[in-house]
Length: 97
Image (cartoon, rainbow, N blue to C red; front, side, top):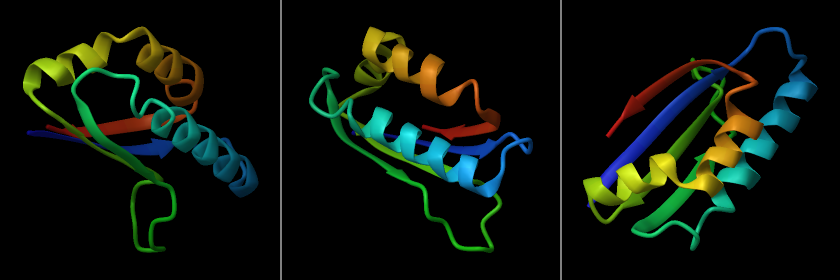
């Protein structure tokens, strides 16, 4: 099993309401990939961190293998979510596999 965790910080230009809507869209998009990506075991997005958090949201996903994770990275449905719902709105990304 391979764990894939990402923390994102949204761009500062958005209001708190806009940020919540963006986070909900990212959560729906990424969690909507469940069952569509070969080798993906689990995927969850946390959009409600504590006030002490220094990131806006977290992806917590698990894959059967490193090969499955690499397949996810280039899968067209994942790329559609990443390009449409994540990358346009995020300022920073931190990843640990």
